[in-house]
Length: 270
Image (cartoon, rainbow, N blue to C red; front, side, top):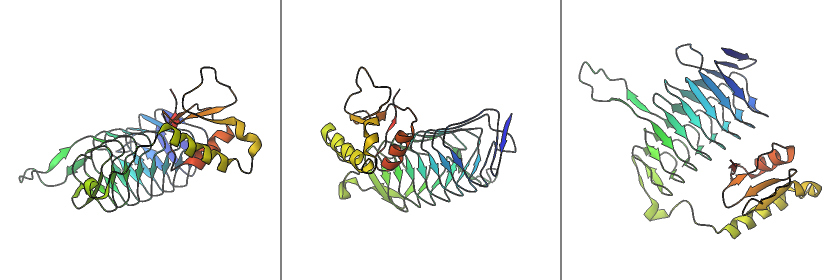
């Protein structure tokens, strides 16, 4: 068992922590029932805020993940989170069953995600006693104060502030209310189609903005529509067609990624 202590505590059989990770005071990561996790993986450039509690047999999160203070992630099954995750303070992520979160997912403050319903006395005939996996695909966004039952949220789906989500969310649809209903026909889809040229133009503008004060470093970042066959080992390429980049972990690359987030999201290329 690996046990890492500072002003935070991690107890796990295997611990992998990436570069430039910030774990604030009072964070505790372990398994449930005072057991160590089997595995904890925290990607590069992640942030875990004060007094966050993670109690699960397996916890993984990709690069540039942000978990704000006093969030609770707990349950008997694994919690697996992709890159560029962001969750605001005082949220609950329950993993009584498997909780799978894709890339670029955002969860607003005071939201609750539940994979089970359990408390009523089944001996007395309570009908509500079940667990079910939850899957949030890429680019899902719960705006804030949302309560979510064990659903599948398809990519680019959005639940508006205060939604109580009890049914699966379709791709690029927007939901709201209690219980949440599909509002897409009324207010429009959350995402519009952009051409590759439009994406490249937007990214070139972000690059110019970022390098206004350090133009000499601009040749370390290149915006492309396809990765070149022969790549310069001193350059990080951002491919707007695939939303991926050639991760090198340089100081300029990390700073540029932080400049882009949360409104422009890229994941490492395979």
